Length: 405
Image 1 (spheres, one colour):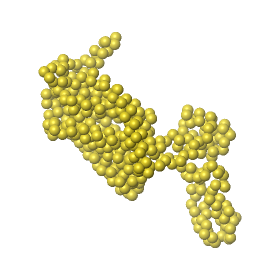
Image 2 (cartoon, helix red, strand yellow):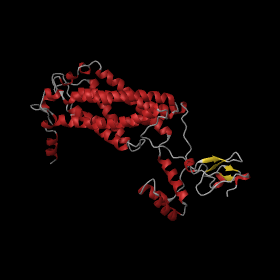
Image 3 (cartoon, one colour):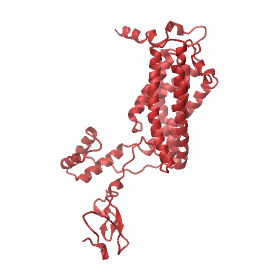
Image 4 (cartoon, one colour):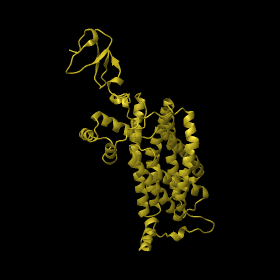
């Protein structure tokens, strides 16, 4: 049964053009061809990447963060509460008002205390600034090195300048050691990203990131054993050309260098739009869609490869939308932030700055009375320098001490 499935999976008509077999891609006369078995090494290499990343973040990224004065905010922890913790883990992190009232009765806490508990609990799960910086540092380092290595691999090749040469002699195209290692390292890195995605910083495009990693792994793997290596090296280098810019912008953002971050981000946005929305669809996709048909009739591998490229292109359009939103904020004078990131909730957002003190005693006082902080508008008093909230059901008198009528 397994042998039958194996034979069907590796049926030549699925992966190779008509009249070609796997025997045509066997090593001979000193020429080495790509084989699916070459990819086995990427799994142990992925684990090696995770180990290297651990020591890089510990001994390189962390000291660098200290030099850039990246400090952690002190977070108030949610006190232990079995009832609220069970709801948080099983039902949701942001209970509705009806659920807050029910949890209030079950836990013996007030509704405000329940809301405060969930706010602190959500903040506990949010990644720290140091964690974000270390992750960005690791990815920046890899993408920069990978981009330089990728350009070194392809810049002297004739198909880098003439796309039609990508398919010259296909699929009887031998590989060279630089292509082999470029492929193995890139594929291993994306395996490591997939392995660590559960523990990495989770952003709003978490599902899209998983789709991207899986599609990338499938594309790199297929392009290797179907000998789409020339096209594959072009595609990988094209992607790496903008990724390191984004990660460097994140690093400067976490360090508080806002102007540097914004300037690098604008450069990243320009490079991303040009490479992902212009060069990739109108040069690379045109190369993989049109030129092969001049040599062979379309086959399953042709459709499969270009379908996966289509998935990546849709993701690029989605991310370009987020990038343009951030660029618009920059142009209009707003602070550029990663649209995919969750913002940390603060105690002061609900008038709970000093929850440890609790109650009205911890609020600022005006004439001996706590200032209300519930997002009302304020109006200056005619008899004293205080400002008072405008409320629909009460007026403030204009005589001394501002006693309400």
